[in-house]
Length: 293
Length: 305
Image (cartoon, rainbow over all chains, first blue to last red; front, side):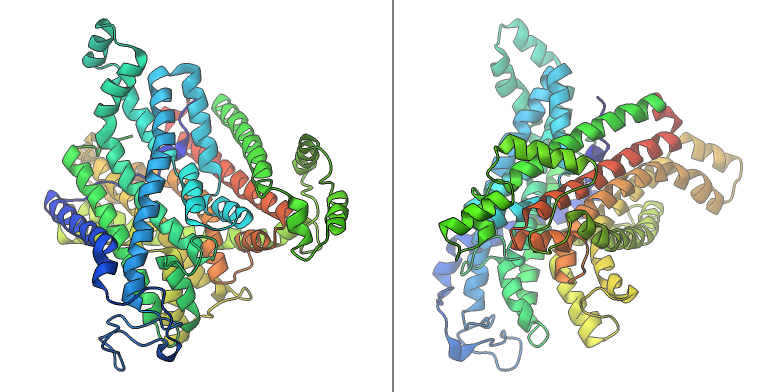
């Protein structure tokens, strides 16, 4: 069985010049740090509560527009809830989903990929088949179907995305394991009488970790976008939790008259995902992982 | 060449069968289907009637083989909600999704090929960097959000395109643009790196030494080689786009297969869900197979496979 073609597909290549690469890396780290800070301490700093409704103060515009209110720098939503407080709380949900999904899908994908790449032969055939099958499954549709049939919830979204997004981990872990398994230090470990599990965990894994870190950023960005899409379609994080995707969905009915209700969470989402991707590209350049097939 | 195709075909069939099994199991996840079909107000007796009527009282493996056997010959059973055969429903909706996919892919290629070539020829200049930034941002834009922005700008403020619905060709423009955006970053980067690699190769140096014109070198020699991976990835991307069109079709209320999948998920119409998952997967499998064959045709080195 030879390589499924799609393996070479969605590998965003490295940034053109090293100068913009370094600047991009710095910007990416700054963005991610900012969002993490917002998620951790944000709701302690914002005086308003993200869940308290105030129907007398519905759809107040943000501070740069006329008619804004002093207590609500980013305005209020259709139920009069403070938009800044909800945005900051939403960062927590996006990051949580991103991190948990990466952990779940990483465990699955890395295990499969390392086993396939290390043992080759029949094991590898099975792993390649699993990757090919996974790639042919339409992710959004299946994720929607699972959540639709089993009921929405944060945990279920994480589990579903984790079970669906392991393909790139497996592809990269497999390819890199194949590269390092014949290196001298692995032979040396064999000669020193190390067990297979020792070699896999202590020799192989640390040496492919840098490639996997790059994949982790890509998958995290993808998971955050997918959660937003699921929540937007009403089959992700259940209300009243302020997921950014859900905020866009709730603002949709008012977007023609108050476009900022979808602009604010949308830009937040874009900036966070851009930041994570910039970190990933920076890591790739830093670790010299760009020649990856 | 034939051996390669035969092997790929066998693999594709095996993958399709696996997806079929998964699609079947997927719809059984919710627990008791009869309960969800009968609805919240149904009594126990109603549920039993539903269970009998839909054949859900049979053992799971019999249900599975019955479904698989009929699905092989294109019979996906009856929809619970639409009161029509699933095959009919999909047949009616498929052209819309395929049109959307092709419009999206064409737009993506029209935008990403020139951008990628331009960035490669002007490597490390501000043009290259702007293209790179464009692909980075393009990758980060949530497609459903881009759809809403286009609705506000093109639909409401400029009033040049219909906001949602299916009727005319204009209805495909905005969804096409949004769908194109899901493929543009990858295609642009691939074109760029392919062109850079090609322009640095020996045969380009030979062509230059022969005194060929720059345009001839770029389009006749470099592009032809750089296009090999782009063509096959474009086919794979189309597969991804068809699978990913569900969000875009739903936002624009474009009545394609994706929208059908979305409606049937909301209505617990599991024969339709199963069939839509399978159909989209089969398209992806077929397109990757096509990509492999195209690859082998374009690059003789791969024909031995």
